[in-house]
Length: 154
Image (spheres, rainbow, N blue to C red):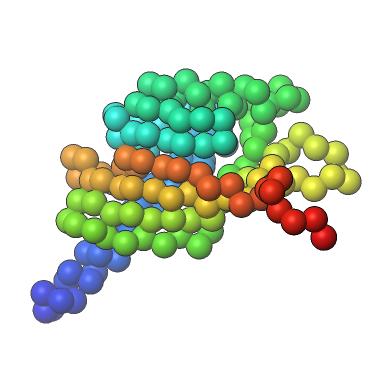
């Protein structure tokens, strides 16, 4: 194999590992496993979401654990929300760094069947870094696209 082919294969594997990382985040969050977020984020990660910013792994774990509890209105202890990820684009910016974005379809599960289950539609914009051979999210910002109170009324 040529160096170009090998580098392309390495890049494909890196992008796939990063996609799997974002999916793993959703599975941990939806499954009430916020204490395992060290599998997803760096120690000094920053996460910016609708309720504010979280800085550092301990604050991220605490905030996501609290969010889970506040959404588990039925006390089902499983999947009070479902974070579906789509259209993940990743740009490798160096051997151990990357940027990316993906769509978020955020569903809640405590609404009656006649109501739509969407909590929000958004887009994650992320920075990734490889730490000890594993990809991690070092910064993530959620851009909420809907609902948008500033949207023009039809």
